[in-house]
Amino acid sequence: QVHLVESGRGLVQPGESLRLSCATSGINFRIHPLDWYRQAPGKQRVLVARITMNGTTDYADSVKGRFTISRDNARSTLYLQMNNLQPEDTAVYYCHVKRGGSDFWGRGTQVTVSS
Image (tube, rainbow, N blue to C red; front, top):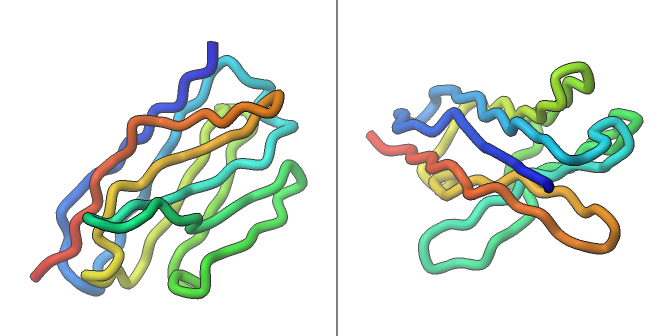
């Protein structure tokens, strides 16, 4: 059974940093591309960052240069380092993996950026 558990929620001020983690189980972590999505209040869930099994990364334009996705294959854990956070980054952040044609999501972790 696939489990994705996000952590690292927080309330921060603009310009501050936060690091999210996603602990996984039930998948062959090393072979899967992994994603971070976010969903702001009243908006659709959108892709924030993706990392392939080889470590190639891709980012939404809105977070390029500020966010860094990474993976620790030994720990089966996905990370999202978020720097220079802004109010528009306020959202619930979800990790995601697709396995065997099915989508698996964590429950999400709340990030709030406010002065």
